[in-house]
Length: 384
Image 1: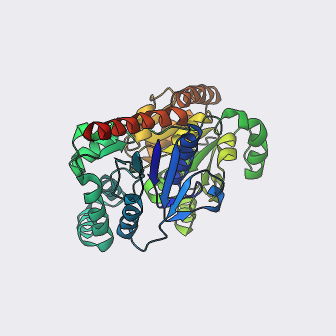
Image 2: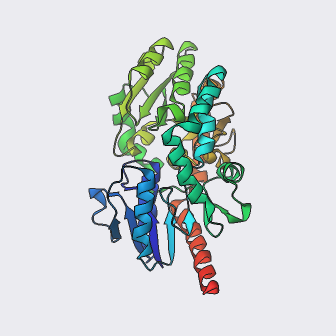
Image 3: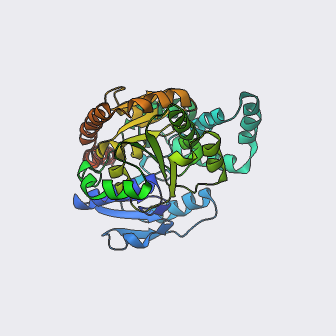
């Protein structure tokens, strides 16, 4: 098939959507498909890929990129166009951010109740949000366009906030590369990295991976680590990604967890950190289907995350991870993390998590999406 993929930045080191798109492209190429990528920027690391590049250049606005992508795509003879959330001219639309309206609503929970009405009013008038609304209106408007939802949570959000009819939605959870992320890497990375971090083998190392600290619930994880420290639990937290600032370090000091938390910033390869860790923590306020939870599972780590994370739909509470309802509830988060300081229980749940990942591989994910491509191509043939 001749497949067009649309993404603003084709760069596997930029973020979750970009990383997934790169891996997905590799699978499509391995399957013999001709892949055209329309993007504003292409990372140097993608130069060797056998893709057809269509660079539309960086744009100052999201609407500008979407319009430029449409112009590039209209001149191509493709069997299917798959947009990753940046444009509006496509056969299959997949937003790796889920519903931005639902995300805005969830992020209001970060504010005290008295401040939420004012913030909601700002969301209705500020230019940034108005631009997003114009973009989303076009992304969801075409009744013939299929919408790929990364979780049932996201599918429900599309119906509730964007008026998408259920028959237009195809539900496919994210998949993970179970060879790149695997317990076998512990032999090479676990001991050296734990030594570098100052973590003994008797301590439980908790891992947080994310760039958007506020939305991903890092403050809750820091407060929970403080509770573990106060209770004398042998646990430490390592934070990978983002740019840690004064706010996070001050909170760690106030919680009595400053000596229990290591901020390592952005890195190119998280595999050594998954190999060094014992469990994964992501008290996110909104995540369509966190790749981090799946990468942790593939690495043999149980996760503690929230019901506001679509990846939580894949977990079985108490078997391969734990789920909390309130992303701000550091007391409940600390309770479940304390259970994972029990080495035998943690190992058993990690083994179950690995089995979960093996049922949700990137290869299976790719196959299911290609099935949707064939559905779209079949519709086109019947309409011709």
